Image 1: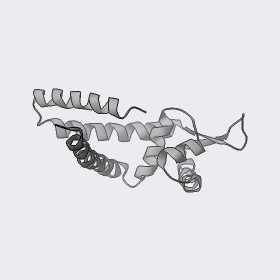
Image 2 (image 1 turned 90 degrees about the vertical axis):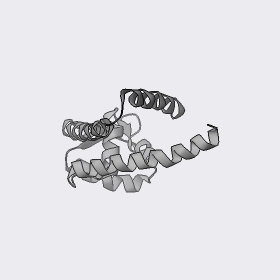
Image 3 (image 1 turned 30 degrees about the vertical axis):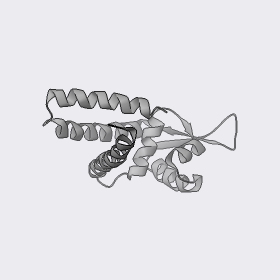
Length: 141
């Protein structure tokens, strides 16, 4: 298979998979979190991050992120701190409650994916694992 065919297949398959995962997350969140809010928790679960960096990562403006963070702060899922090195910057950090919410939704999504893979043979699972390893290399941050 050539690179053109593979790139078309990736562009076809990955969005479908992500749409499926987003739908599962929406159902699991029971209207408590939007997908974008969940993505903020995903980013912050890796460690405290600047407001500006989170906005850039999400591909939204800092003003749009501010409204989203206001909601997450109200729900005690995220906390804001002024950056001691640059008082113009805000550092965002997931709270214990936010981490639990993130982990719960992550686990539900993982269980849903496991259920989808149950019909695969061991050989297909091994092929999938190899393909995911290659995708991981392709999409390294």
